[in-house]
Length: 305
Image (cartoon, rainbow, N blue to C red; front, side, top):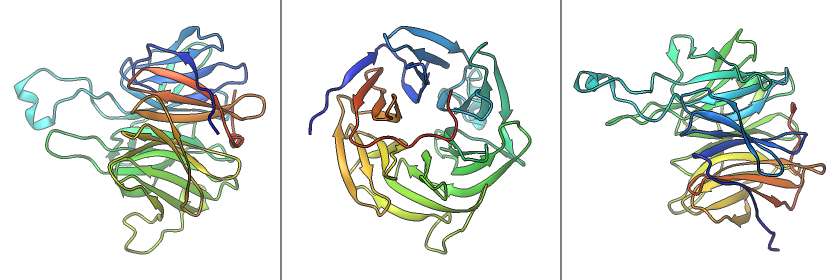
């Protein structure tokens, strides 16, 4: 069944992280512009915050503030080349808290213990008010940092590593029961599930799992998985790069739907509207936010504003 796609906004600079608000507007991050933007229902654009770096995944927290995975920016020079030119804008990633009313951005985390956050990508809040977030890892000139998954408190009081050596950890979401954490790996086109033992801790699978997750699905050919949303049936809806799709994967690993988009870089999806059956999708190559009716209602997040 074909469904009509409505363009809500154009001219966005690599949009990501859509958050559907109760007033009908949608917040999006503009990675290349270093800002968070509100797209009103009539298409009007207003700047929520100029948080700099590379704001990526967004989520509303238990205090109604906006939490941001900031990848630290994409233009940088490896340390051992620093003497060859001026310093660039990348100094490491962070988790930020933004007041939606004032636009003030506060940095909550830059490290987990002694380890510097590399490029935080996407986040989701559990029912207890803690956030799971993915760290994509940063691609340097001749090497790259490993990706990881973390769990942190929104007041800045604590952060723990959940899983390490995840290959380009990107989209992240929770099952309807909140007992399974889903994570996409961009470069492998794999969807992993992590069984949650308690907030911030997983029941790790034995080898050959590289990080303790269960492999749910791996897509064939050259396509790259980006960020996700979960529908109320527990299906994982994933923005899929190169092929220009939203790929819908069931909890048992079946690809149950491929939704074609007019863009090769479908970066993220969220659900909203009074019945949660409107999908808001970011298209990065063309700089658009689009909306369309969806087949199943989206899963309601634990917090919204």
